[in-house]
Image 1 (tube, rainbow, N blue to C red):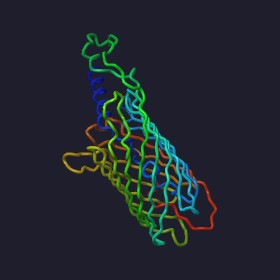
Image 2: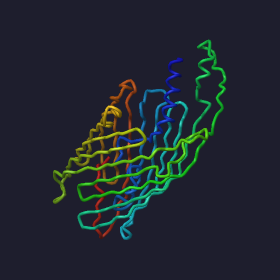
Image 3: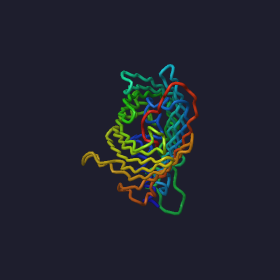
Length: 329
């Protein structure tokens, strides 16, 4: 039992010091969280919900929720979106809440090529439940493992930390190719509960991909395509590269990912192999993915489960407008 509590303490300390952002395996299924440039990425309106349960059988599991809405304004070549994200980590219930608005603008230097800058403004809150934490002095003073833990001399800090943040992005795309970059935490919001100088590190992401259409564009039979995609992220001392492959044959989507490809001995990064299955029916899209943990945490973590649900409103317009190219999930 003591060993278990000690692991929790060091895990909690690692969360505070590394301060890494929540992430989704199906990051294209949370488009506004990936980049503000994806605001208004469909012809009309879109609602997206995401849920992630990471390391499902580890006590104090990590859970992330996301809800977004975006609208395309073709006459203004713009997109507007709203994003709400919540994350709960560990037995100490280290919580992150993010709420904000995103905007994008489409520039067309050539009919077959687009440039789409985007910006997001957010309110960010960090919270923690000190009553659920166990500190080192409580373990050192404990004599009987079956007796209640003694009180700690550690004074609690702030229960909530609030700040504001800004994200910018740039997306270059054609009908079947895209390349984007995002700069998160431009204002480096505060993340400390004890008043010391601890701020969220910048996060830089570079992502892109290519779609090969096997059939379905000219005569509109059952559409079939293969898509490759990548996502490269830098935050603080962490580096992570994800590579994936999707096969879509209407109405099904199947995908596989390797997340956390090592970028050198100093940054091992290996995390998980993920598999995805999705189904698209008219305006609805739903997908489930499972991550097999391949890091030192091992299969004892239970892996990670993730669900995405997307509803795209029908729209009638005389102007031809295609959704921004990216994997379905």
